[in-house]
Length: 311
Image (cartoon, rainbow, N blue to C red; front, side, top):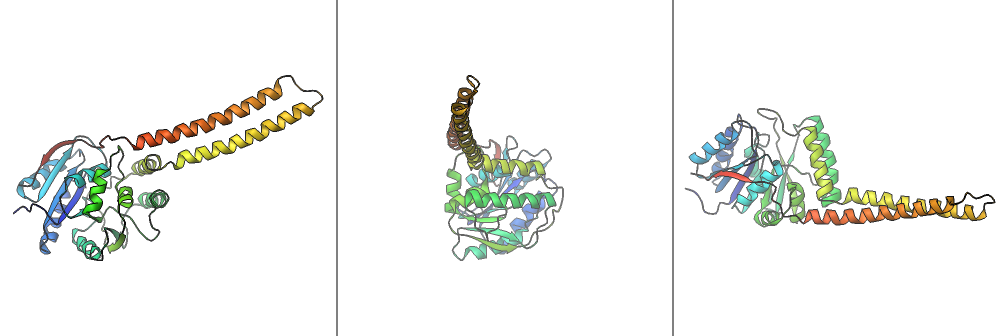
C-alpha cells in the first residue's frame, strides 16, 4: 500500500540507462524493503534518447511506490535532481546514480550515520571507479567548492547522499537557471558528515560525464555562484589603472622638464592612461551588477513533459 508520507524519498536522475535502470529500481526497492522502511522512488528521465522512459514508466505503473517523471528536454543531472527534490515527500531524501555504481545496499550506511544528528550525509567512496579525466575534474571542482561554498577540507562530496527534509525544502525554494546541487546542499545545510561506502564499476554503458561536461560544470560554478573571475579582472584592471596613472605622471613630469617636448604628446598619453583606467573600473562595476541580476533570475531550469505516479 502506498504511504502518504514516506520516510525516505530516493531520487535517481536517469539518462540513457535503459539496459541498467530496471535492475537499479529492483535492487533499490529490495534493499529498502529488507529494512522495513517506508519509501518512494522518484526517477527523473532527463530526455534520454534510448528506451529509458519506457522502462521507468512501466515500473511506475506496476509499483505504487515508484514515480516516473519525463523532462521535455535534456537539462542536466543537477536540474533532474532538483526536479526530483520538488516531487519528493519523504522526511529524508537520498540521491544516487542510475548505473549501480552506488550500490543500493549502501543506503543503510548513510541512514546509520544520520542518527548522529547530521542534516546531510555524503557517501565517501573507499575506492573510486571513475575514469582519470573525471578524477582530475573532481579535484578542480573540490577546490572551487572550498573557495565558493566553504566546503570543509575533510568533507568529500559525491552524488550519493542523504539529506534531511528542511535542507531539501530550502534547496527547493531556490530559484535560478543553473542549479548546482552539491553547492546548494553546502549552502543550505549546517551539519554535514561523510559515511564510507563502496563504489562499484559501471555495470553497463559508459559515463555521461565527458571532459566537456566537466568543463561546463566548472564554468557554471565560476560564473553563476561566484564573482571570482570578475573580481580577478577587476583586480587586474586596478593594477593596470595604477600603472597607467604612474606612467602618465612620469610623462607629465618628463614633458615639463624636457627641453624639446613633442607638442601634444604628454597630454595625449596622460589622458589615454586616465580614461583607460576609468573605463576598466567602470566595466568591472557594471559586471558586478550583471552577476547580481543573473543570480536573481527566477527561470526554472527544467520543464516536465509527463509524469507517471506509482500505481
